[in-house]
Image (cartoon, rainbow, N blue to C red; front, side):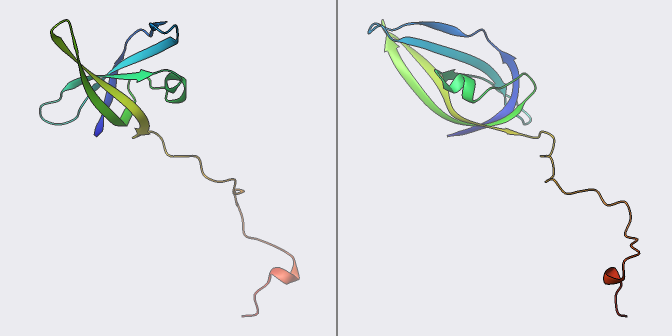
Length: 115
């Protein structure tokens, strides 16, 4: 699934140890969707992807997400996990390393056109 919007809040990173003893990390962001009736969605990024896909407040992003619900003690909990983040609406990418040309004047004979 896809989700687009603006990052409006970055929550504190959470970490811990699983039952099997593995370390885990989770970073959550609040993304507001565009439109007449904007919605706020809490999106989680897990593990090493936190460092690979950094987001900042104000970023316009397109997210590829998975939505998953789990039952715990008779209650259901839903989580939206991002597995790809593309930033959009930012400044254009810098141009290639082309030298700036400030004049086309040349005294050399080889640069003269025959007509």
